[in-house]
Length: 389
Image 1 (cartoon, one colour):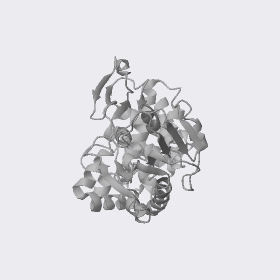
Image 2 (cartoon, helix red, strand yellow):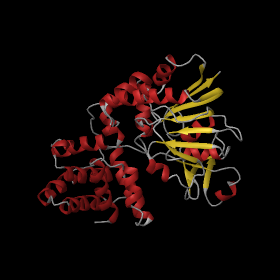
Image 3 (cartoon, rainbow, N blue to C red):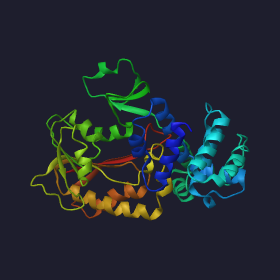
Image 4 (cartoon, rainbow, N blue to C red):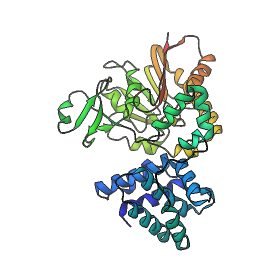
């Protein structure tokens, strides 16, 4: 077996056990060649993006529902079908034979003949999909709610974007533009944000354009103090430091704060669901709240298969409390930006409305906006700018 297929199989099993694809890919491909690492990433994320399509194809070509197969057999078939149907540079015989070897390697030797027989039937001829959600590889309930909120065409556009790898954007701090030499980049409407077309992102940070957009809404000025709540992993903190050296980065996860060691902000471990331990108020506050992440499904596709409707209400309750807590330390004349990388109404407009309903009358919504995949570049995001009189 090639290292890439073996590693992809291993990572997909770990993702089904609760792991996160991006973290596992980062940790487990470090020692691989760049070529093998790239193929591993393509296989893992491609299978996760198109999982519902692939499982339907398993049943179509085998007559067996995918969820009735042993996990290892199903994953091997998903990998094989993904290569046969969606990758042009993979020889069909390699996709088939190595998927069979993966099953044997996983001690499911008795299923090797079944996997071989199924994959030899696979072709790229059009097939009838049972419904739009299967065709677009998204859960029924999620596609239905997107259709209600964004309209049927909008929901389809979003889902199609999430089937493809996202574009790569980098953050280039002022004065470092000369370091772009040797890379093929395209400037965006956001100063310092570039679309990377060719070349290595290093030494710059990869940071989605929607994430960079959020920081611009703070209207930071040199010397302005920013309280950055829920700051980890620190991309927005680092972007803010380009303008003002006075940034206090907070997060409840101490380990993640430690990982921000290279970012020269004051770091404080605290739970922002509780009253904040500050004796002063802040002229600028960024609350990029933990959320479902449905705006990032192109880069975090496993979220599609883990999220359930009940979790949206749980996120909503925490987000409302976080926003209420943050508003308590917003200085008169100050600005707070609330944001989430979510497409869901409960995590955006509804949070702002509910939090301000019981807040002091001095707060005012200045701006509400969404970035919608397929309409706007980058991840799906919601942001609200709230001012204090």
